[in-house]
Image (tube, rainbow, N blue to C red):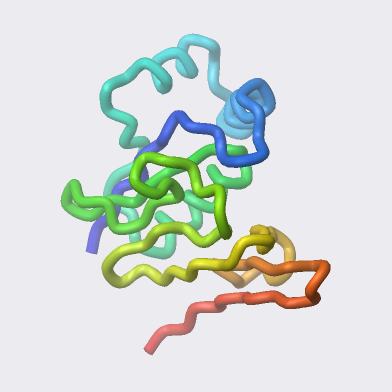
Length: 139
């Protein structure tokens, strides 16, 4: 299967536009003209022909930089960090369709980035000492 990564010019919850733009510019060494093109282009597909694993890896990278993205297969969204065009504000699980894994988490849970480097989903409630880590393995 071949997937595409689509950039969503929406800052993730808790982020700010200035910091997210600076992180994006620094990570990919983008010029102001390239940033302008990215934000003004009608097509936000930034990478095509990706494996599922690589597409999810890039999605996590962009999330870490402060941005929403989605993964598409043949033009259909199969994984998105946005829900119905709205930012995720209750819980922290992404909306996922088809074969990619997903979880929805209750109010009060937050995303984590450093619980386990192999995890594709990491979330928890530090106050309640409850955590969830998803580590994929091949069948």
